[in-house]
Figure 1: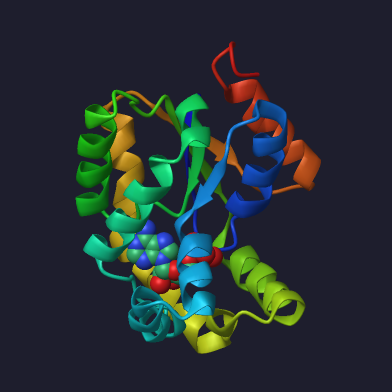
Figure 2: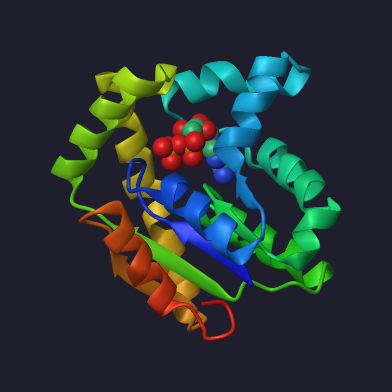
Amino acid sequence: MRIVLLGAPGSGKGTQAGLLKADLNIPHISTGDLLRAAVKAGTALGVKAKSVMDSGQLVSDDIVLGMLEERLAQPDARAGFILDGYPRNLAQCEALQHLLERLQQPVDVALQLVVPSEMIVDRLAGRAAAENRKDDTPDTVRERLRVYAEQTAPVAGFYEQQGRLTVLDGVGELRDVYQRILSSLPRRAA
Ligand code: ADP
């Protein structure tokens, strides 16, 4: 099963992806995590990406696609994957489509978690305290939400046109949201 998780920063994608990964036994591939690992390791790519991430902007499409391609080439991704944080704009939608066509592994479903923006701001403030992420400061959060609305919101339309989009209410207890996700998945996965 190949799943793309969509939703604003703080909509719970990462948490839900973790649950899905354990139940479906497929890797959770988060481009944000891949980028943070590169920053931590101090690679050339990480050094380039850091200031962009700290400002709340998107890292260049080339860099992220290269990283993703490398990750998808690892053997565990052959069984499927949960993609979190990618695609984040329409150019990335096209790039992913081409990449997965080449690998003969098309996306099965795009799941969008919908959470009202007031709630998002509260959640991210909580996460800033808990995880100490540089990009969870109020100014950067505002910028990430703006970038999301401008560049990432159209991604749902891309999958809707393909008849692969499922929109889910992301408000509520973590386990309740997870049940909604499970019951929305095509049979063989749930
Ligand atoms: P969130 O979804 O909460 O914003 P992520 O961990 O997905 O957090 O992303 C953190 C940052 O990493 C983004 O603000 C962006 O700078 C960078 N990033 C992650 N994924 C991508 C991507 N697909 N394209 C460009 N930049 C990305």
